[in-house]
Image (cartoon, rainbow, N blue to C red):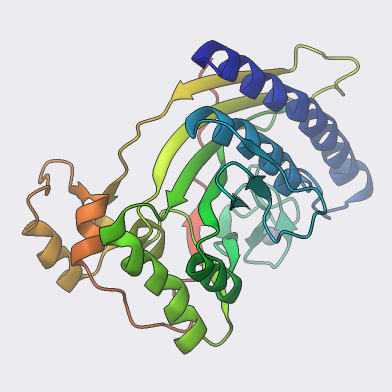
Length: 311
Ligand SMILES: [Zn+2]
């Protein structure tokens, strides 16, 4: 598949989903205001949608042969019969409901401040993570049938509450196990969880210490704009998709690390003091895993920091 064909297929698929999201947003917005309903359902099927997008991504970036596993019971989301391996696709939607200090939940897509008490103090849930069955991953890795993870992070980029517009970003990453030097370090993430974790299940937070330890390669990013002032049947030009060339190299910011880790990172050859980053591969080979904390980094409070559309 050439670049143009890929972009066309990829953007076309996303645009079709964006029409679904437009209708979901329209309905949810209506329910919020009419029925005081704060049950979240927008992008509920994002997991399946990302799986289909990951298929297009894999066939373009990794030389074809990938297909959906259907209900074949292979244990993988995508399979490649040519190489006899499978792909696990994980998505994580960070465009979630927030919780006000008065405990009311609401979505910042629809409200600038709490619809009950007006406060802008909000807890942003940080529990949206990539859920991974560590035991199964370990088994597949040791069997030699594990090709890669495709991770997709969905984020809210801009909201315009009054205009009823929103911009999401979808970022696709690949984590493979081809690099012999990195294999055991990456494998240890799953092994540690199985042996030392309370459950054999990883809750991997995007852009976290553990995420970088897996040396993700960023493949592609798209911006998706949705106007939900009308349903898609009345507003067909209410969605747009912008394809962004991805930077392949992922660098680790020192800002996410602890003091002792930063000291190690500052001595790495790839350390860039201006950017405050190091090369991801070097980071993984030199900075050891942290002791398992009991989920201390969950939950984070931030004050309204939404950006507005600047057009
Ligand atoms: Zn409130």
